[in-house]
Length: 296
Image (cartoon, rainbow, N blue to C red; front, side):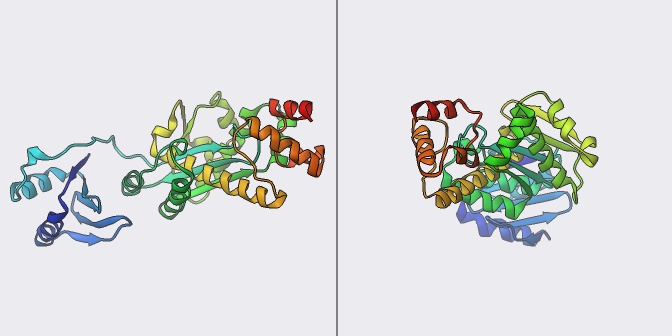
């Protein structure tokens, strides 16, 4: 069970003194003022004033601290009641709808409730709702807190796979399965969550060894789970990094998406490097390729 309340910053010292006087042990945590523990109780106080209260004996702290403070236990601002924490892997992809650039798949393992709470406190959410600056910042934070795996499929390799498989879902399944398998190599986990991009059998069939034993959950809007949201961020950050590298290599500012600007850039690539080089920077099965060649 997790309770969340707000503590006035003027009361930080008062809370800390109360905990010290009641034999709590203290630990440091990123972005937190402190983490304090006692049997069956874990408290994490963040710089924002948010206080996470977890553990089977959390009611003991609530009744004693708020009874001896200016607040009453009834004044606790209850933000959420979480289900029992489950160790899990989240996976998500980026670049699927972008004509130029890599297809990237991210995998993130969340192995403790403390890590999950820190990710939520950092503001980890679906990368599609974040600025590029926030994505790069959170990418570093996630990789500090969690075990991660990033699968990178270059345009050339993507085109090679698509010409053989003729099915984007099979390519995605292969990438998601590899991200899961990589995280299972040295970690124990019984559950993986991904966005629903096709029949569940695609990923199941692509899994090997330990991956065959895992519970796989595919669901719409899976980014609502912080593990999948974190995976979406590291996948997008890698996609953006690779796009910048391509822009430097070809001395052309590659655009995201599949729009009119992308068509103009495609024509520049052909004029500068030849039609055959399009496969090295773009997903050529897109209808965008036909438009580029027609206008060219």
